[in-house]
Length: 221
Ligand code: C5P
Image 1 (cartoon, rainbow, N blue to C red):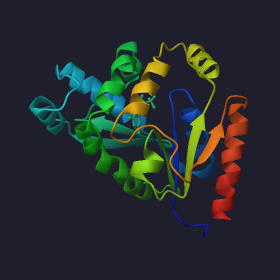
Image 2 (image 1 turned 90 degrees about the vertical axis):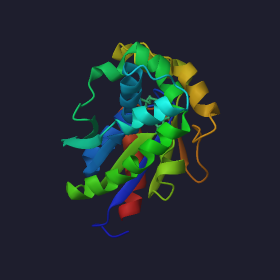
Image 3 (image 1 turned 135 degrees about the horizontal axis):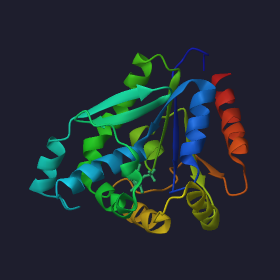
Image 4 (image 1 turned 30 degrees about the vertical axis):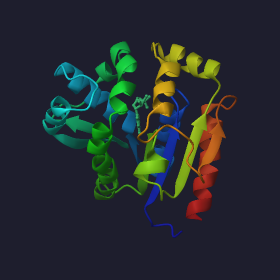
């Protein structure tokens, strides 16, 4: 792959598997735009819950989604979703959202609503002069960018993941979310065929970033 081409790195995995820290590190090292799609599901969940819309298909959901005007703001290497000019803040990481987001994320209409928007982030990255995109989530390598240049699936021991969240001071429903995310019909959480599985349980963040960097170096060599 020539040095000046645009690369797409897809990083999927369960809750607290190390996706965000890894994606951030990689985005800085290679001048890639970092897109955290979990924040999209969190932000839309917050908006839908705020409008009193239950996590079920129907007219209320369709109308609720139609009322959401999506945009993107880029700060440093990170792209953030905006919804009708609201930029999500720490409120999307509250316990209430942790407990409910997977129920909304299982709705085919919500996933369909966010699909094009997620793909459009490649154009946002190009327009902002990035050399590529690193997008993290649950279905990036399987559904959003199945032809990504690099597709990774991160896993880690349940105790290690719980420790990571505790360190961040966040109360999270890690196992419950993974259970719902893995068993939903539309775009379930799973390692896509052909993706590289990386166990981060016993690796420091630097070691994970170095491992992924070696894969990217091979790609752009
Ligand atoms: O990545 P994060 O843990 O913040 O994601 C929050 C939730 O959003 C996940 O538990 C999952 O239900 C949903 N999600 C998803 N597909 C993605 C990213 C996140 O279903 N691509």
